[in-house]
Length: 420
Length: 149
Image (cartoon, rainbow over all chains, first blue to last red; front, top):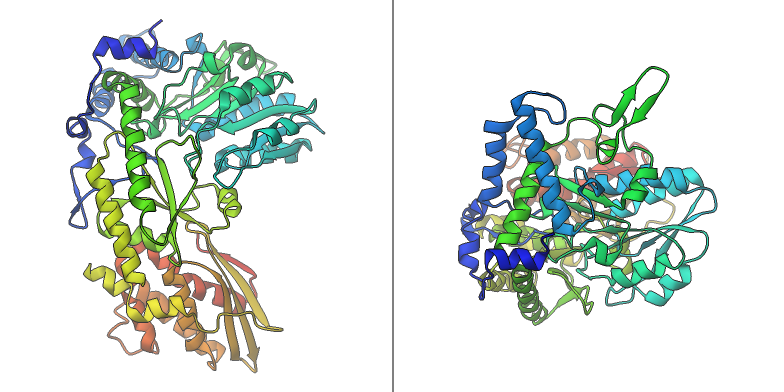
């Protein structure tokens, strides 16, 4: 099995991060917005796609396209080989035991909903409890709320401190014999906090409770080893890790996926169908009804190859350096407050400015070609926790530069000047 | 930055900093809440309507500079107007900020509300400017909650 470290060794590590060379891989970055060079700092919402991934998708559509798992004909076999090849790449990327544990879905949201329907609706009932955290994205709140309402189960929430860190003791106190599932995010999209999920998973397992990890913000930015973490489910999106939209994964331990209900009914997920009874296919097909986003999922495989080629650890190191630099520059500006100051953070910088609404900040930054997210980041309870209606959020990728952060800091000063 | 200074004119910045009629109204005859889930803007509009005339109007809430200034100037513009004139003004304002017609140069009742014309160059901000007006419209028509999404 090829581990992450092996992959880096095989392709040769870059001793210093050549960001200009990396930027050359991303065609979208080389354009002007409002007459200014685009500065793309909205990677937490969706990242850009490198040329090799674009080329792989086009090659599939031009040369290999057919439906998968269907025909005996040549093209169907090629499409199937490419699609299943992408699954193999995913398996190695997260170090799953088997590729059938990696279910293709359209993104993190669909992955979480798959577990809610397939696991939650089958194994969670009246009086049971589901634990989530105070920093979840709506995608890891609403499905569980819907389930709890339907089953008369109870949703419990792990609180966080003022820095935006989960309070472990409170989590520990919430776990009990009624707990049937823990669903927490690896990295907060609104705050950047990296949660100690390995310890949290181990704690839940003491009660025999399975744990789902929302990996939407972590998979693109740090190595993930699902066996080492011992998580029971792990969801992530392709479009936040340099692949096209419509691609994503829900990983699940085979023994859990096997006893779960199928997510959707339809073609490709059956063994036999009569009007009296249907028997379901084996994993992973059982969970993948209908024709999937074949080109996008093959693109996810190509994005994984790309990440391995450039070196995931070096990319992560550069992103950490960008976060450190941006935090230093932006927090030095008078009137700016950083929201989310956890010790362990990924490359997300959420901030507010006294007396200036984030939406106004976003508009003024956009005029200078800077793309940030302004709003509640699909995490309204986080905004309520910090008593702000919204924040402005710059989220970095390995193709961002320190010069871009200088422009960001300068433009924030301009915003303050306009509103003074 | 010329489009930007069109958007953030001094009058708008002033109303953002010191919004007028920014308080709750005791025993209003009409009230409604407005939300823009995209950016988290939220406001409540209170009206006192007597004999088909807006006797008093006020608002509360939180939002961006454009929505706050728009709400503030709206309350000044409609106070004392008949229901019909208020609805007419809403239509004119709407077409000004969406750029549906050239209200800036046409004969209308907008007066100093014309400074919101700059919003039309910022399509995602149009909802910020119109949220207070949609909420006012909802209040007059006895709809209690309005969302611009």
